[in-house]
Amino acid sequence: MKKLLALSFLYMLASNYATSQVIIPLYEKIPNSKPSADREKSVVTDGILRVSKVSVPSLAMYTATTQNDKKTAVIICPGGGYGILAASHEGSDVAKLFNEWGITAFVLKYRLPDDSIMIDKTIGPLQDAQRALQLVRENAPKWNIDPAKIGIMGFSAGGHLAATASTHFSKAVIDNPNKISLRPDFSILAYPVISFTDSLGHTGSRNNLIGKDPSLEKIKEYSNEMQVTPKTPPAFLVHASDDKVVKPGNSISYYEALLKNNVLAELHLYQEGGHGFGLNNKTTTDKWAERLKNWLLANGYL
Image 1 (cartoon, rainbow, N blue to C red):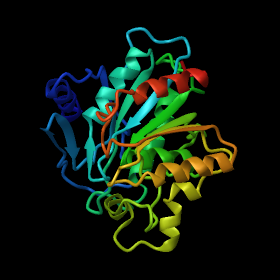
Image 2: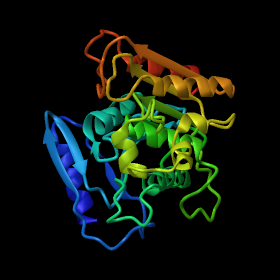
Image 3: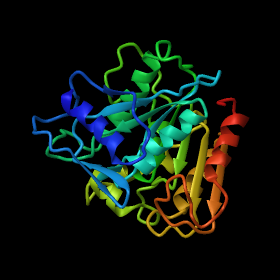
Image 4: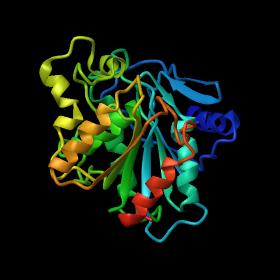
């Protein structure tokens, strides 16, 4: 617990990032874990807080000074190829913006897949995402949140985790004795890794999560465009057409799968922007966060 509080302090000092009001451990006993030393490391480079070697997952809760009457909450999954977490521009900065809109935000510090700390690394991040949804829903009354308005957001590989949580919710990979719904009510996916296929997939994310020689069955399981059903939650997607790291076809394929299943979806493709631009695509004066705000308004979350 002392380490978690120290990391919260680091978040505050790193730059002008939003101050997390409370750090919430995800578990009393971390599932699917092997005994190991805590090797977590946080560094700031190029103005970005990067957290690596995460083995003790937590939620950083950011409560808006004035919550909007919709009582919406969003769980944010930073990206980093399942190798690090870009915890500021894809985490705390985003939480601060949501707070300005009156939305309670949670930045998920999820475990990074590693055979040395996990029995099955392929399910580790999903366990943490499902537990985050379970925990927020269980505490919704106490935190002044509508349990039917809890979304999940992810950037890059965090987008893969958010999309996985949005398509794999019917199969719990955590203990869920009270049968709490693990389905996000909506998802927000920014330049997400969606597919693990050879033609679309981001090799680094795939290798880190399911290994360098995965079976075709495992590739299909974690190619979320193949897992969409009519019960998949509505989604807002944003991507740059010139993204050379995560092909824009990832967002397009997920969007098309949502449309095929009659799921509400909105996709914004910018002609430039590359990868990892966070909230600020410097190639355009258009602010995609404003498009997101309009989408949230249109769907009753603001």
